[in-house]
Image 1: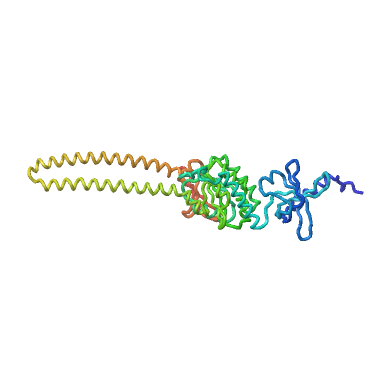
Image 2 (image 1 turned 90 degrees about the vertical axis):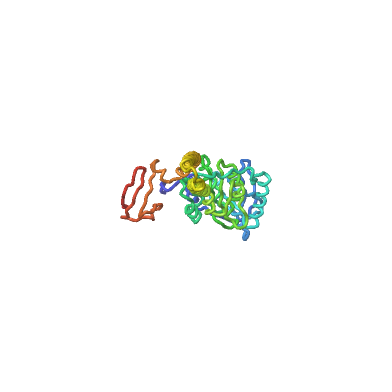
Length: 390
């Protein structure tokens, strides 16, 4: 007998459990024999309705609370589970990491029940919601890195010096809940002006995470205003109802964040035109009145000319004083608006060690924008560095 191949029961079970970690699965079945342990964990069996095949399951108290599905004997569910052999009795169990209801009907009933509960608590009333800032700068974004949503958002967001703090997260189905909660915890203390949560449309099953009670409450209590762009044709998600502002698409989210800056830029242009138009009209009116007086009163030309000259001097002084006041007010508005636009200028970031890379006159955002041997220009705070892609 080769003693080198002999291991203890404990070590073998450790080895077996290590291998079983690769065998996680999503399993559909009917809950049977549900028991609540004194430690708060739930134990039950999952039955196959076709032949009564059975697997033993356990869901930890923390996971049960997060996913918000009220288990009961006879309830059909889908569990995301990982097999594990308990070393004290050699019993195979499935550790449930996520649980979800089966079918649109069950999901709709759960949706309406939770919606009514949260409505009675006042989580959806407008009076408790925070206002989205007119000029947001520091923006947290939670969505999936893959797919069209993030691309639509980045394509439409304006160049107003936004600082985007992006956290990649799952957004599909019940499995996304933990990802979304983790992303919100990551951004909670980042001193955001606004938090954005986005995903595309889909079925009620795919929206389960956004109808989760735990996530809804975290959104309602988030320190910064929460802006959602969670599209759904039938029912608005509960997260959208609890958010401070909800719009239909990622493009609409970007447009809302741009709106304050676009309005300010338009007001500045309007004021510039008004200043020059008023000045031109005032000059014309003054000399027209002087001309009319001259031709109407030809007697005593010398005296009249002096009177006209004095009148022109007086009116010119008044005009200059009025124009100075108008210019001062306009200058103050332009200075304040200029500060806002200056803070939004992406080139301002050059002073902090960032740089802007251009190739063929266009800003380089992705590696695919350039190829080997392309000439590029690196704009830094005090000049331009010319280089080549190797």
